Amino acid sequence: MSIDVNNESGTEVDEQAILDIARYALARMRIHPLSELSVIVVDADAMEQLHIQWMDLPGPTDVMSFPMDELRPPSKDDDEPPQGLLGDIVLCPEVAQKQGQEAETQHSMDEELQLLTVHGVLHLLGYDHEEPDEKAEMFGLQAAIVDGWRAERGLTGPSPAPTVS
Image (cartoon, rainbow, N blue to C red; front, side, top):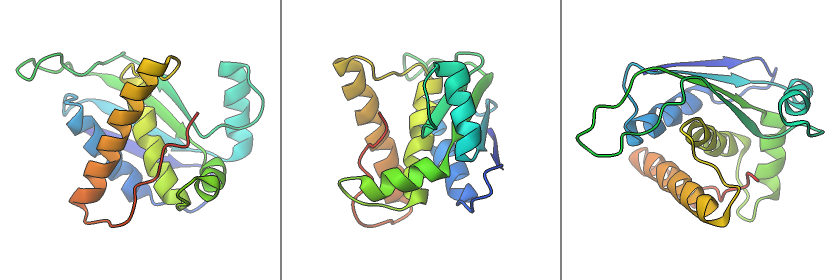
C-alpha cells in the first residue's frame, strides 16, 4: 500500500498513527496492496476554502474525501481486488481537537484524527451516511475498523464515538 501523509497544518499530529490506521482500514476492506492513497493535514483556513469550493458550505470541516479511481472492496472473498488510485483525504486537526473535546466520550485530537482517517477511507470506497441505513452501515464499519486497530495495538479504554456529521 502506498500511503503518503503530508502535514501542512502547522499542528503536530501523530502522522504514523494516521498512516497505520489508513493501512489497516484498507487491508480490512481488502483493497489491492498496490493501491495509492494520499492524506493531507491542513489548517482551518485551508479546510474552509476547500469546504466552500467543493461543498458550498461555510466554515472548516473535519474531513473531506476526494476519490480518484472509485475503487470498491471486492464483493466476494475470492474476488481479486482492483488496483488504482484511491484519492485524497484531507484532515483538519483544529476541528478534530474541538470535536474530541466535545464528544460524549472525550478523546484526544489524535484519536479523532484516526477516526476521521477511517471515515475518509470509507468515503473513498463509496460509503456514505446521508440515509439512516447508509449511516448505520458506514458508522458500524467505521467503529469495527477503529476498534480492531486499537485492539491490535493493545490500546485500552473506549474507542472514540463517531463525531463526524
